[in-house]
Amino acid sequence: DAQESRGLGDVYKRQGNICAMKIAVCVKQVPDSWAEKKMVNGVLDRENVDAVLNDLDEYAVEEALRIAEAHGGNEEGGAHTVTVISMGPERATEAVRKALSMGANDAILVTDAALAGADALATSAVLSKVIADGGYDLVICGTESTDARMSVVPAMISARLGWAQLTFASKVTVDPAGSVAITRVTEAGVDEISAAFPCVVSVVEKINEPRYPSFKGIMAAKKKTIEQKDLAAVGVGAQSAWSQVNDATPRPPRAAGVKVNDEGNGGEALVTFLAEKKLI
Image (tube, rainbow, N blue to C red; front, side, top):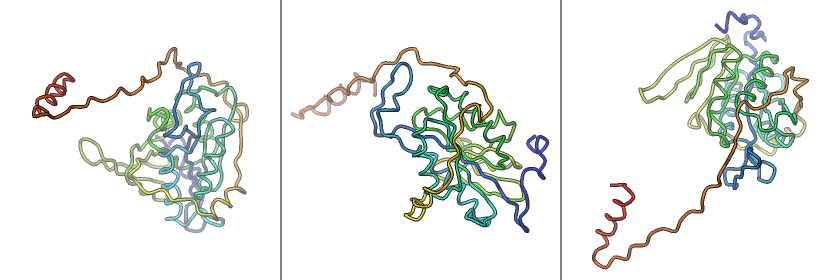
C-alpha cells in the first residue's frame, strides 16, 4: 500500500490551507513521426533524424499544469510544482525545454553514455530512482512513446516504486489533500478508480488539448533549471538493455497499385481482385 510505504505527512506539506503537491512528468525525446527511421547495429538511428518531444507526453505535461493551476498554480509563489523528468542523450534538452516553455517549473535529465540503447526495463529503473529521491506525490506519463509503442513504462515505474497505478486516464481529478481519481474508458465500459498519493497516472490523448508555448513561456524556459545527472549521480549502476535486436529488415518499398479499366466488366474485375487478396 502506497500510504504504508510513505505516510501522508511525508507526502506533502501544507502552505496555509493548501497542500503543496510535487508533480513529476516523465517525457521522452523521440524521432519526428515523419522522419525515415533506420536501425543501425541493432538500435534506432537517432542522430541523423529530427528529434521532438514525444507527442503523447505533451498531454501529460498539459494535464500536470492544469492540475497545478486548478489548485493554486505552479508559478512563483504558487503552492505546487511541476518537474519534468527525462532520460536520453544531451540533445534531449531540446525536448525538455519544450515542456518547460509550456509552463513546467524545472527539469531533470539523466544522460549517460552507458544508457545508449536502453530498453523499457532499464529506463523504468532509472526514472523510478529519480522519482523516489525527489519526493513526488504524483507522477504523470503519456500512454507510450511514438518510437517504441510499448506502453509499459508507467506500469513498470509503479511496480518499482510500489505505488498505485491509474492508467489510460481520460479524466483526472485531484484532491490536494492526498488522493487522485480517474475515469478510464475500456471495452467493457467506463471505469472510475482512485488512489491515495503517491501514485502513477498515465493519460490518453483525448484528455486535453496541449497548449502552445507562448513567447513569454519560451523566453522564461531559457532561464529555468535543467539538472543533468549521470548514472553515478542518480545512484544506480550501469543499466544495459535486457533485450536486444539481432536483426532488422527495412520495410520494402510500397508496390504499385492495380489499375482496373472499366470496359463494362469493372465490377467483376474488382471482385476478382478482392477475392485474390482474400478480402471477400
